[in-house]
Each structure stands twice: as C-alpha cells, then as structure tokens.
Length: 384
Ligand SMILES: Cc1ncc(COP(=O)(O)O)c(C=O)c1O
Image (cartoon, rainbow, N blue to C red; front, side, top):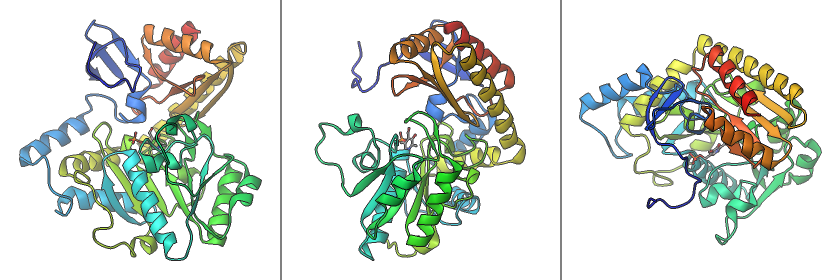
C-alpha cells in the first residue's frame, strides 16, 4: 500500500541502484534495462558525464535561478541545439509536454497574424498529457472524461499522402509529426510521406513541427530523427534523452517565427535552470559525435536484424517488428500474448515497456553494447 495516485501500474520491484544498462533491486536482482526510463536515460546509469556535471554544479552553490537570469549553460545549450538543428531560438521548459505546449502556442500565435488556426496531427500520435498536448494526440482514451481539449485539430492517417492533401486548406497553420512514433507503436514515417509534408509546408506556407521528444538526441542514430528525411522543421520539440534523466524540455523555433514573440508571451519557473542546462549541454556534446551516433546505428542494425529473425521463428506469436536506431517495437498477435511475454521478460531480468496493449517497445540506453543486445534477445526468446 502507498499513497501514490494510481495513474500507473506500478512495478513489483524496488530499484535501489543503477550502473550502465543495469538496474539493481532491493531483493538483489540485476535487471537489464531496455526501457531506460522510457527512452530517457540515454547515457544509462552512473555515467561519468552526468556525475561530473552534477558535481560541478554543486560547486556553484546554485540549484535555481529565475527564467530571466542569464548564465553560461543556458546560452551554451541554446547555441548547441540551434547550431545542430534549424538555427532557431530556444525556449526551455521541464518536460516533453511543456515543450509541445510552447510549440502549439507559438504556432497558433504565428497563424493568428494571418487568419490560420487549424493544426494537422497524425493518427497513432502522442505528444504528452497536458490538455494542449492531448489536443494533438490521437489516443481518445487519454482525453476522455476531462471536458473539452482545444479544437481545430484534424488527424491525418500516418503515412497517407492523399489523406494529408485532403486535409490541408487555407486555415492550416501547422503540421505536427513524430518521425518515428513512440507511444503509438514505433511507426516509422515513410520517405514519401516526409517528402509530401515538405512540399506541402513549403508551397502552402504551413509550419512543420517535429516532435523529437522520444526519437531525438541520437535515439535513431542521428541527433534528430527528422535528419533521416531531408526536412527541416520550423519548430522542434525536445526532452527525454536531452537530460538523460534530468528533467528538461526545449522548443527550438526558426528565427522568422521567433522574431514576432514578445516578452511575457510564455514562461516557465524552472525552465533553463543551471543544473539541467549544464547536464544537457554535456549529454548533447557526448552523444553528438560521429563515433557515438555511428555506434547507435550499428547496434540499431543488430537489434533490428535480431528482432526480425525472432519474428521469422515465432510467426505464431509475433506479427511485425519495426526498428530505427535503438528504437524498436515487437508487435504481437494479441494483447494476451504480449502481456504474458512482457511479464515473463521482467521475471527473466529484462525491463521493457508495453504499449498499445500488443507491442513491446525496446529503447535501451544509447550506450548499450552488442553483447547486451544479444542478451536481451535471448531473454525475449526464452520468455516467448
Ligand atoms: C513523442 C512524445 N512527445 C511528447 C511526450 C511527452 O513527454 P513528457 O512525458 O516528458 O511530458 C512523449 C512522452 O512519452 C513522447 O514520446
């Protein structure tokens, strides 16, 4: 018994320690973590970059400064994010949903100047649990019984170019997309769909919002998932792996949009604090190297080929596998088989996440080794 609101189905083990890709429990179990706090702990546990950043921050005696106060890491991280994406200006917040809220406000504000107020989002999308973020998320379960969420949102069938063309009109201000859908089932955007979005946004002067909260910061083998597609979003949202466990959100906004934003338009008490920007700056620098990202791609290819092989051998239980970099989904025939396998995997020492009822999501720390990937596949196969 505890006093926690029952918004989660809580684990039946208590974690006391972490190291690399492993978690250790109070009953002395060692668990291989292929959830990584749901695609957050990009550098795994006990990583020197995080530890040293925290130590250095302690030396300053500062845990918090107000949003208006400027400091070294706020400016350095904003430049790093900007230089490595759309060259825009950055608004810092504390979570993925908050970075989405900022993106939606900024896009709607931009559209209000020329009478545009419709947003196109995707089916199977997820952008967070706040009311604004829910408005562009497709899962009806998440927004039932809470009264109205903001309207003027249309949902396009993911990867369906002709449907997208039908939905676009003079009122469309923005298209929001995860290039690899996380919560929706590890659905990978097709090159053709991305190309169509690019063309439509350019021709109709529609803003492209790339939600990089789960797929960004090296998760797919590129620093941002959109870089697989030759597009350049006008607004980019980031969180999760950016802090590798320290809460942070960032919304990167191209200059032609950010220039119309005035003081007081938006804010966040904790956003852009010295602690989280210092850690994130060092995390980003560590991940954004050719060597690190190539290793993610190589290990991602290994993970992809091993789950494909597993699919081939277990066609009675598995219906599909999808993977880009270290973001993978194994889709089961039905919810029952998925749940049973998921629970057995946990008993056998492998942590993952179960999404959409029938898909097991694998998002290990980006520092995972090929040996640990093989070990995870062995555990899944045993559990099947
Ligand atoms: C693509 C995407 N967008 C937004 C969010 C919301 O992030 P947060 O839980 O930090 O608010 C998530 C979280 O899972 C996500 O995967």
